[in-house]
Length: 151
Image (cartoon, helix red, strand yellow):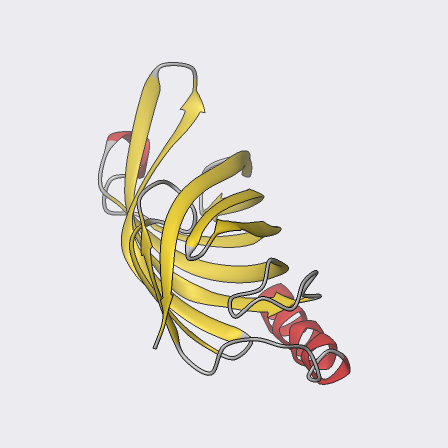
């Protein structure tokens, strides 16, 4: 738990350093694939909250499912669009639904980049490190397709 606390402090520091960047006051994303989950995400400036269903493959052709909720920090916007493409870091709580992870709690750290292709349509590419007590650390790519609207 102390590592998550250190990461949150680091994200807060980075946030102060990049506060002048252009991020939306309010936005809502409909996430259609794995990152951060299949579900909804609400963004206010550089922070967003998400919740949804998270399928992943720790081994080829074997899908493991989770419920997932968490917080994401956005930084280093690369353009001046209404919804800017940017990098992100996040942390999440997951609850296993299937396989060896059924009814187990998990913590995850994520990092990556969200690229707005056209209007609110965007792709994300990131990586997740998922930790569950009694299991080995899992690291997976986290691609995504989403649509966001500025509120």
